[in-house]
Length: 157
Image (cartoon, rainbow, N blue to C red):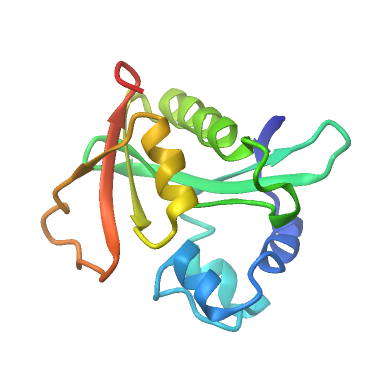
């Protein structure tokens, strides 16, 4: 798996990974508009403001997408997804761990945070396996139903 800076051309394929509103909400929150459209997708994922990365197979296939930015002194991971055709192979853990490394280097922190919908058990279990633990919601963040805040650091993870 190679980690690369995401390109606009990648976004059309990524949009195709979400067949319905439920899958979009699990991934991007209720604030991500559905149906996904070229003219709104980039705005909804803060394309111009957040570092976006993709995972590629050696043959160039797109395996995953994720973003990170600095939030409260931590590398905050967002919109993490593995290509549906590649799920169930352990790529989620590998990709998130690699994204944590990239984010740590770029942002200069060894602490991490993310939000996850608790009904998204595969994602929740993936993050737990990487050392993420439940934490209180940050002050000022609107609490979403079925959504938890998790933190980790490189020493524990």
